[in-house]
Image (tube, rainbow, N blue to C red; front, top):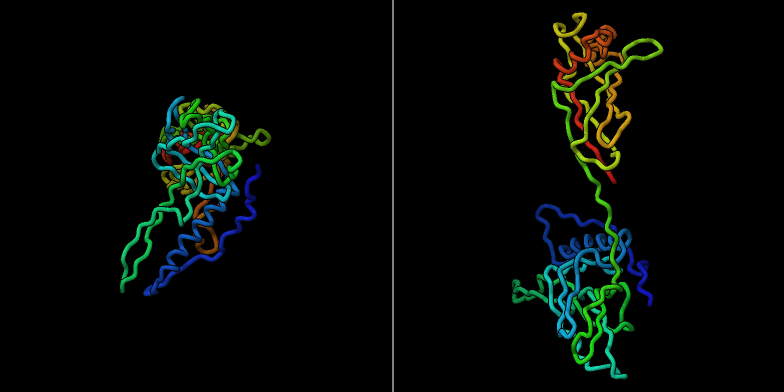
Length: 322
């Protein structure tokens, strides 16, 4: 059995309705807003997700029973239309005594889109004696069909049943239903090393012996990552040192761009390179403050300075399974 091709469904309109102050809106213009957004959502569904049962819609029934129960759930048909069964329903078993050979008859219980001419309509009176529909029920229709009548993709199969004597000969069989794959959900956790409590150490260029930045070890074990996540880090805290607080007695700015080194599921090292330069607004052709001056980086108190005076610490986020 072959189903409909998505290419025949067409592409949605590319215009975007807009309104202006004091514009008189007709019903067609308001309906156009709904139609444009709905057609784009259906395109997204059919191109990126496919069709089938996405959530719930379990079918239950007992041997000898004359009704089956369908649980609430969500499915998509091959045109991308949302089939949302908000509440469970009960459906009567087809009233069939037996097949031509006296045996049981197989039926398919399906969920399908309810066309406008089949939908429950709510009407309201308008001006000058006008009456019109103001709401259409978009709930799907649960219906029986034979396997030969099943329209693959338009009729979303929920279960097959075997009927004889107007009753089930066995519980409903869900084996033939098409189930949409469950997309993995990334696990995200965040944390911080805490202001004025983060332990820093200097990073020295082994070739020159010059301090080129700082590092800190960040414990992420509380997040419980099962695999090494993708870490994002941010350096928080103050940046500007006053003349009174800076080694050498010159006001300056300490800053750097952090990056992750040697990430693991429960920890990572964060490196903060601190290149020298000047920063700030321009006064008389020169920048106002030196950036990471050599005398400050060389001072042995640098790790304690950024921890206790500037409150440097790391805020982080880990994303696992993205």
